[in-house]
Length: 161
Image (cartoon, rainbow, N blue to C red; front, side, top):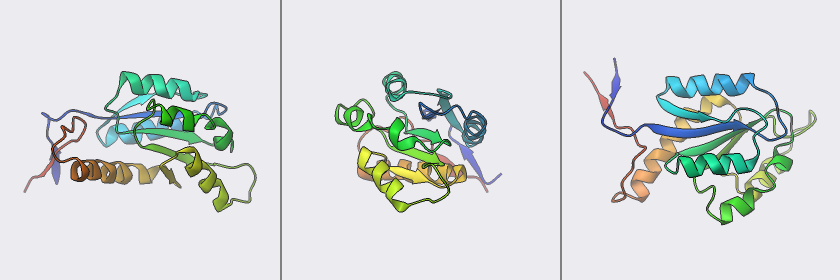
């Protein structure tokens, strides 16, 4: 075994769901399973989840490391139009990560990602496999940026030889 998790550390929590107009459940379940295998506690809101439900979940889990939204029907921008308001009031104050098929049609434009970032999306991923590394990077940035602040959701990993 190369590493072990410190069982004294608080669990790493993420909030996961599928955009409000999207009922694609399979990818959501596979992503939840993958994240659990990486040691995350996944608050899975399922499919057709309005932004307000993500805000409710964040209020219930204020130390969540990130909110993860999948969208396969191509309507992510329309589903996330209320994000600026929720971000400005602090109701969604952790990193916001979106992935999947983010636009309708076969022609994908960089403008889609720009529009989502303008709404307040922090990270846009091409594949779910990118999630664990991104979440680890975000956790290490929190430690670097706020070294004196208690980090309840960071898991300490020690190398065992």
